[in-house]
Amino acid sequence: MISAGIDMGSRSIKVVLLEDLLLDGARGPQYVVKVNHLMFPGELDAREAAEKAFDDALERAKLTRDDVAVVIATGAGRTQVGFADDGVTEMTAGARGAVYMRPNTRTLVDVGAEEGRGVKTDASGRAVDFAGNEKCAAGAGSFAEAMSRALQLSLQEFGEASLRSDKTIPMNAQCTVFAESEVVSLIHMSTPKEDIAKAVLDAVASRICAMVRRVGIEGEVVLIGGMAHNPGFVAALKNAMGVDALSLPDMPEYVSALGCALLGAERALS
Image (cartoon, rainbow, N blue to C red; front, side, top):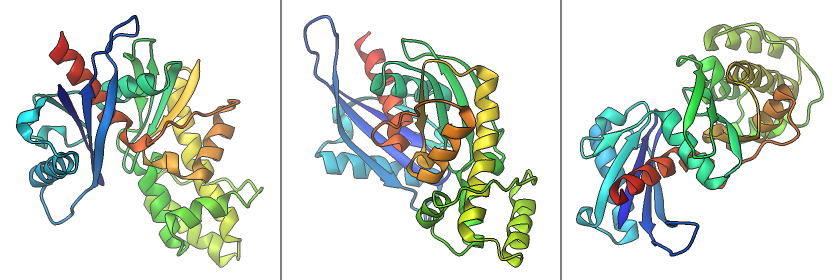
């Protein structure tokens, strides 16, 4: 049996296809990720993009829609996945996927392009509490992306540059527009780019950390979402949270889609 999970984010669509292996024994059903996919094709509207992402994933896996028993969607655009059997919140999907990949997960941090959130999970992968940034870019990846453009650096260069700084420069602005003005002022003051990059990522990490603290930091702390690929942000968040370790699962941007596929498989088998 094949189940599919689709995460409709603001910048990309992630698709995960799972095959149920139905292994015998105490561990119960096990799953294999067959394929995952796709950056958002900007020339299409959301519904068309979801169709394309799903069909491309199926083609790569040499499957057809008839092979898929259930499709579960999540993300800000989940209602645009017209062929989905059901939709779940980002917290529900992220928690389920994170605990599957890292069974000791109890605190989940999810930071994507437009949103960031902290989620408390239980041992079964159920989200029991959460706090989010209410779609303010100052607590998400697009904030860092905008600031990297102001410094004329790629996002990768921006993150790497921040690791070369040991300075602490507070940023007071609470939105991208005003923060960009702060960055311009720092540039005019000949502040090194690496110090500015660290200041920006420290500010994002501080806001994310404040959300996570509202749900409590306990157990293994796992970071998912696209910002998990930014080493400067990872270092800043670990420092802000005061934890010994911050776990990064494989393919962190696909964890919510994986959670959807797992939930779909469990539903189909029940």
